[in-house]
Image (cartoon, rainbow, N blue to C red):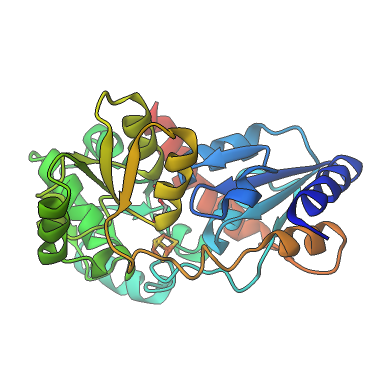
Length: 305
Ligand code: 13P
Ligand code: SF4
């Protein structure tokens, strides 16, 4: 079966089984093409809660599917490829953060959405890369414990100078691998190009950027910009999607290290198998986890408005 035949079959099965397909912008283009919604982690979590379908199929990583289940507990939520975790989300667990909280009892615990459902149950508010600055600014408390990403946390701290932000040593191993030396080399090679980076990159890389933003933020900026050439400092799929969307512009991948194996783990065949009942994994969370984790996601939606 070729790609278009497989896509046609997926669209038929999706309709028959009342499934809403969500695809994070880091997954392959042929999956984004058959999705009902694509976008960054914040947009997908809101889209999923509004979708009328009985079933949700997440093409992304586990914490995103868990977030959908928390927001839509009455729906069946599936992760298309069960091995797709997030290296950052797996860095910190409830036990570790409970100990840290004892050291900082008066801090508001802000969790990047790239955390497990279990860890969210003991945090005060969630943020995504597109909403973090606004939400942290809207928190009344001055003292913030920001987990797990120290790079996103440093970026937020710079934008929110009135807050006292405590960071831990976590982060995305993919984005954090890019170093300022290779960035400068790319800027010398393409002097006309604007550099757009995700705030999961290290501060020394962010300092060289013309724009810092979430996956959707980077895409919107590039689409709307009058400029014709860009260096894209986030997972390589974004440069590929942009090249399709804007064929008159040129997009360079900042570094070939920017490939997330977890985001690349889901294939169109996985989506098909999951819809046939031969693959994927249903996300099952107990009621208490859903109720407790939901508080910090609801707080994200309230403070992000
Ligand atoms: P966004 O919040 O920008 O979608 O990013 C999610 C992610 O995993 C980035 O590495
Ligand atoms: Fe997680 Fe990094 Fe992959 Fe995003 S790019 S899913 S933060 S490992």
